Image (spheres, rainbow, N blue to C red):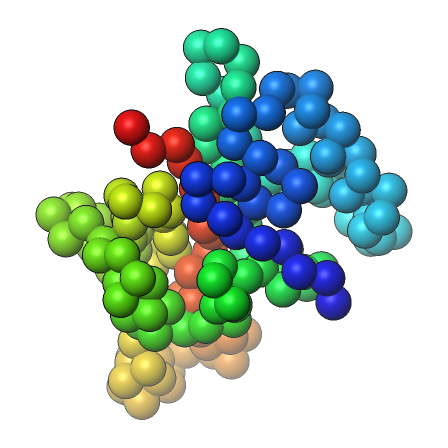
Length: 161
């Protein structure tokens, strides 16, 4: 499995902060030609890399979803972002650079302002929740889907000011 490096201040994989839309499209084309699988929708990689541009047309924000872990090991400083449980991931990155504890979305969204890094998940699930009655009463398919919330659903990097 190939590695997709998440490098705050630089980029994610081939897509770098400061690139133009044309350069980003070239990167997406390379991903499509190398990794596109028959069961993927046509614009799988174009939709997987959410990119925003500044007023000069340069990339200032890149976000990727956890679904890319099927194709890549998504690494930030040798930490597998999408295969490390959320609590552990936050603890480890917080040791590198503290997260913004004033964020009102705490537990679903963690912002590391010095790094220009954000982690997001739609809902919070803790290890101890797996033993609670409400979880055990869920259908197995719902349990499986709910367990995804032990991990983050997306990571983004952005230019810091």
